[in-house]
Image (tube, rainbow, N blue to C red; front, side, top):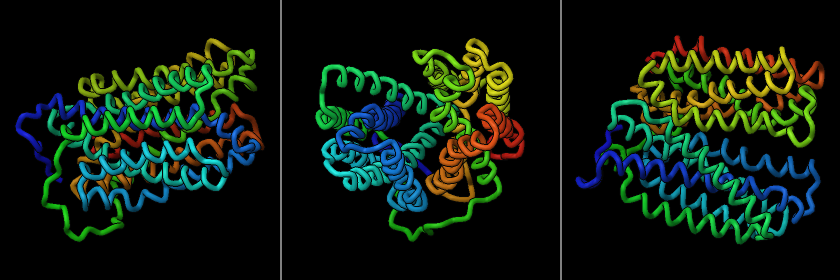
Amino acid sequence: MNYSIFAPSDSRKYLRMAVAAFFFVQGLSFAAWASRIPDIKNMLHLTEGGLGTVLLALPIGLMASLPISGWMVTKYGSRKMVLIGAILYATTLMFIGFVSRTEQLVIALFAFGLWGNLTNIAINTQAVAVEQVYGKSIMASFHGLWSLAGFVSAMIGSFFISVHVPPQFHFVIIAIAAFAIIFTAYKHTMADSDRNEGESQPMFVKPDLDLLTLGLIGFCAMVCEGAMFDWSGVYFQEIVQVPSSMTTLGYVAFMGTMTGGRFAGDWLANRLGRMKMLQISGALMGTGLAIAVLFPYLVPATFGFLLVGFGVSSVVPLVYSAAGRSTSMSAGMALAAVSSISFIGFLIGPPLIGIVAQFADLRWSFAIVGVLASLTAFLSTKAKLIR
């Protein structure tokens, strides 16, 4: 897809800031919801099992949108879709705060996943276009802003909880802030080529071998990412056997280096090359998990999780950037295809760990994840779009 700057006065800096703002809005909104899950659980009198079932609505909504998000971005343009998706995403966040019944929460979370993925595909398509304007890798910094926004929003959530602000008011405040950012940033986003709008676009396009390879790289990395999000605390509790006050140490270590790694990732990718960066990322993930598995003690396990965070940080941004350069289909369709394959890893990673741990041991589960994560180094040599 070709792109043109919609207003002559817009510089590369404003284009980049506008796209970054939408990544920030997504991270801000998602973390606001995540920070109040315990309060909403208590408000609706949900059991742990009931909450787990309800939470499935969000990834189901995300998966439901995967086949159509790329088509909509291609047909109607990433600029229109990022505006519509971001507005609906923030609006749905407000509705979540006002639910009073379980079925209402299920519907709201399904919609939250739906609009979240539409916005994700559209804004990553915009990011690919801005990256082409710059002529160098800048994708990781966009994803870094998502992580930073998540951290900021989590801190805001903790403050609101401490002063007893109910979720509905919390979410309204975040939504208002999101709307202010959206309407300020939108005028500086990248305009799509008019060539594709209004044309008949196939909704389903089979990805070629290069895109499938990129999807597998993303799959392996997101198995690791999903495992760290959901199981790092359990690993420190059951295997490392730290005091209860330190069970989140591994997660904090992972998140800290993942966020920092994304801001450093572009600088490293531009100097080392994308393929070398992915090879290093795979090696860091595999080595970090190997250290945590072989030496399940506080210091080495924490160090291992730090390495995993650095390793995970740049994989998805680099994979999305490469997908956006596909010549076999539009950027939106290519991103949707790669995102679909990658996100399956994020979904099956945590259950896979639980199943293996049930029959063997949690260390075996993390060892298997480490092997999969290491495969990103090998697969990166097979993806022509990475070079």
